[in-house]
Image 1 (cartoon, rainbow over the protein chains, first blue to last red):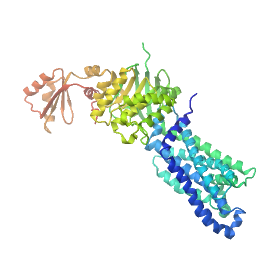
Image 2: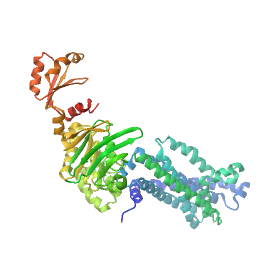
Image 3: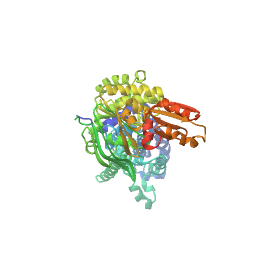
Image 4: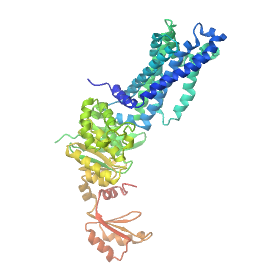
Length: 259
Length: 308
């Protein structure tokens, strides 16, 4: 039986990744350790001791932060892994052009890329789950449960960003995207503080931000606070963004590569 | 009659308002080395990309292995080998990794790829470089690797877009030798080039393209016979003199071509023409007598040189 095209593309990615995997695993370990130590423990002590604890309910700031940070890191990593490698495939290394003179199609390139990003996200999230458990932020089985929504959230960014990067002529657009879209989302989507701290008239804006859905979903999985309906809405939004992004990416790749 | 491997009729490729390939017809028979000769922008690469089932046909009919690229793109791409103008290798991977990932694109089992790799590495004379990163090997080696890569699926038809552009003369000769071996193995080759010596060395048959159209077709010798004379005498005069003596030169040859830097006299007997030049009292700075080439054919057909 024929190997699906996406998996053939994935093999290329894995062979390239073999050269750098140790470094990436190390940084996916160091990154949460630093953040949790500085903000979870350092800043968290102040938060828990101060009057603000009420906004978090009975949850410690460390426990509040850990799942939010996990999903925000997933977003960051997926965005980065989608932006520059896609640009490279199109323009810098042009590996996509070579691939399309074989039986592969644009859809295979996009799907293979997303499967690889998913693989990277799972690896990162597993390390993250171990770290937050070691910090005593979350129980291990709960931390494991948080992996799936974190990966889903990452993919909901990877797909539309692949479409965006695939349509760009230069990488200027990518740095603007990180500066004006990804970083604000990272800061204001409920990652570091509950969004009811944001002025009421701005809150509806947060509801349309995919990362907020990811944060809510992951946090409810990690802290066991999920209600019956909410997770379905969050999952629905993230899956919708993923599917729309996937289709848009295939279109963008075809437009760029098949002339 | 043998079924042609590639058959094109009234083939057109347009990019917006620009017509890159303008109503061309050609056929390529199995085992043939077929060339598209023409300057940059003549429509050669666009034609190749259509044959390679990468670029959609705008108008006309195209069949590769009897299949329509529109409906059987993936199937056609699985049957042919492609050497693109830019190598499009993964520079960060090694020579063998490049062959492996490309072979996997065709879904060839890993064990089979490893078997073929031994042969291909030898064919491409890359034995010592198997584990070298592609960015660390020379341009000629990268080009040979690209050709080796195009053979990983054991294609019967290989498309080569400008196979030796940018290589030094020695690397070009090595490459021509490799391509000649492929031809001897019965592989059909279609290549584009703007080098007349390359076309003469390799092609059994070629078409001359200019502004998207085919302006002549035949074997290299046949084209030279039909569109040029046997000999050419090239004369260089001091600046300003050339223009004043055109009238004197005209009767000395079958045809006179005035280029910015020299005058070409087309003649059946180069020696006789040289003597006639001397007898006319002309005193050129340099005189070169040579056989006609495809460059002369191109000049005759288009009024321009192949390489500007």
